[in-house]
Structures are given as structure tokens and as C-alpha cells.
Length: 422
Image (cartoon, rainbow, N blue to C red; front, side, top):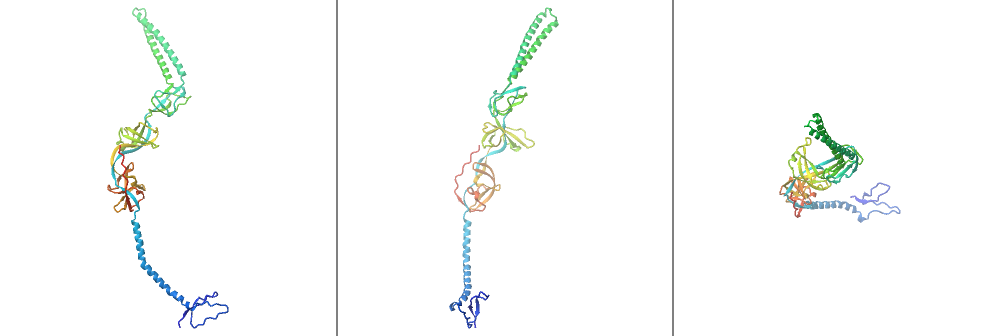
């Protein structure tokens, strides 16, 4: 007799399972008083068997649906990936290299110095400085009084010298009269030859003493003149060491002056660069403040330093503007002009200290090219090597591209003209 699945309640006090095999002829156990019958009704006793049989069928149906629908899902994902891959990464403008006339310039560094600096010193010794009339930065004219020494002592000395001159003049007059009488009596023999010689000698001696006294007087007059320190030329006072009340020795420097306020730039060039410049070559200087001033080469040094192998080029600055002696400045020598292949500066991307451009192909994809740049004029930069002359290059948006990106090309604005080289 076949066994059927029967259901029996689980007992909390034993580990007897809820499902057991029972025989149809087995009589159900007797219920005790107050106990309810928890067995399934007759019509629901076969539900567990149906559930067990339906589970594999449902699993089979699910696997079949997955098998037939998976290729369509995979094809849809591949189509979406292809569509995303074909979408342009960026809209850019393109340009082609063009040949422009670019200025030839030679850059150099150097110091700004005075064209000529005059040292103004004391012309007298052992005199007290009583007045200083100028200070650093003052513009002075030739002959202007800069300082004054005490002249009282010098005036006294001058008076003594002038008195000695008067005395010598009187002695000369007396000696001349005696000599004249001796000459008149020389033929008569009234005076001895020796006495006549003494009179004539006394005349020449008196004249010599007069000359000496006059020279002493002139020296004192010159000393009196030098008690006033005068500017030797037009210029600007660049240094002052004069102090009121000081007693200076002869030649002690009191002031330093830039003659005529004229400055020059002294550029250091290598031996190879010296041959590229000549007298009259134009120069543009850039001061530390950013101000630019114009100059011209005055002279190229005839020698080269044996240690640094560089020579100096002296550049006159006719209108210094904000330039000051002692400043460091950068300059560019204007050597003419030459043609070169240029691109807009936006097209050149600097990455890891190298310059790159992005060439746009016919299929809209870009390729990264490494280039070497040169001169820059306005908004354009010279490309020396690494780029074909007929290549189309991304301009606006080039900084956001990578090698192999797909781009959309937009209309570019009219290019700006490069200023003519001077």
C-alpha cells in the first residue's frame, strides 16, 4: 500500500518533524479533552506535493526566458557603447599654420649706470665747512654753488699776499731807478764796474720778488675762490658726503654727480652674440616696474672678459623715464625681421614642460603632436619644428583635448593680423 504524506503538529517538547509518512488505514490519534484538531482538511492535504512539483517548472521557464532574451540585452548595451564612442568630446575651432614676418630680437640682461659720474671734492684744506646747499637727487647747473667753506682765514692770507706784492713793487721801482742811473754813468767811469753790476742785479732781484709775491697773492685768491664748491657740469647729485662743520683734507669727496643726468645700459653678451650688434642698433629695455624705455647702442666693448667669455655693450638711454643708476634691466636688441610659421597661442598646449598641438584629421579625431616653439608676437607663436605646414590644428578648446578624442569643428573667427616688424 502506498504511503501518503500526512501532517502532524510539531510538539514543543520533542524534535519530531511536522511532516511524517503515515498509512491510510492508520487511525488518527484520539484527542484529549480540550485539544483541537490541527490537521489539514482533506482537500488541502495534497498542496505541499503540488508546490514541490511546481518549483522546477518555474525555474525552467525562468532560465529559458533568460536564455532567449540575453542576446537582445547584450546587443542593446553594445549599441549604446558604440553610440557613446561616436559622440564628439568637444566642439573646437581649427586653424592652419601661416607664414608671418616676425622681428629678430636678441635678449640680454645688464645694469643701468651713469654715463659719466663726476666726483666733486674739497679744493682747500684745513677749512671748516659752513654751508651745504644741495642734497641727493637735486638737479644742478654748471657753476652752481653746492657748498661753502669758511673763508675768513683765506681772506686774511690774501690780504697779506697783496701787501707783499705792493712791497715788492716798491722795491722794484727803487731798484729800477738805481739801475737806470748806473747805466747812465757807466760810460763816464764815475762808478766802478762792480757797483754798476750790483745795481743791475738788484733790479732783476726786485722783479723776481715781485713775481713771487704776485704768485702768492694769486694762490690765495684761488684758495678763496675754492671755498665755494661749484658744480662742474649740468647733472644730478647722486651721492653726498659733505657735512656742515667738518674740516676736510684736500681732495676729500663731498658730492658725486651724474653728468647731464645721462644714463646707459651695460649689457653682457657672449662672444657669438657680440657680432650681431653694432653702433646704432635699437634696444627696448624693460625696467623692474614693467616700464619700457628705448635706447640705442653707443659702443661695443673691444675686449671680452677672459673668465666669463662675455663682453659689454653700452646702450645710451636718451629718455630714462623711471630708470635709475644701479637698476637691473632686461633688454631686447632689434636685429631686423624674418619669416616664420605661426599659430594662435591658444593652439599650443604646454604639458610637463613640453609644447603640444592637436592635429584634427578628416575623421574628426585629433592626434597630439610635440612641437618646438620660437618667437611670440601679439597673439601668435612661431612653430619651429614638429608640425606639417598643411595641418589643421585645434585652437579654441585645445587645452581640454587628449590624443584620439573625437571633436566637432566649428566656424573660427577671422584671424588677427600680426603687427609689422620694426
